[in-house]
Picture (spheres, rainbow, N blue to C red):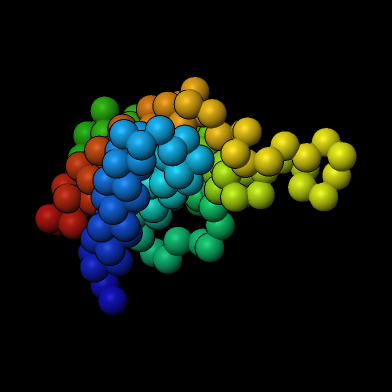
Length: 152
């Protein structure tokens, strides 16, 4: 699989997650929205990373993305522009913020302890909305970047 193919596959996954998250919003399934929105951010980030190499198998890809942005700063800014480069830094910030919700939306916080907060209580409407606020622009940033980058 080429980097272009890999990036496209990650974008397809991000699109599917975003579509699911939007659908679950209509059902007021905040836990489901949180899960799908977080996964959208993760997959969008990995789509950008895939343009340069293999994404690491971690839920928080922000460190890997920031490293690639630093290593490829001049080339990225030349090929897609300074504002797109800034948007990729925003994507890394969103990835770092969303990442913990991968586990929290499944297991809650502090599982196995008296301080456990189950995911059904943790994933409120406000949390789901915040993760959607991260997912929507993350998807768009990754879509625009991968399209521009893979065109050459």
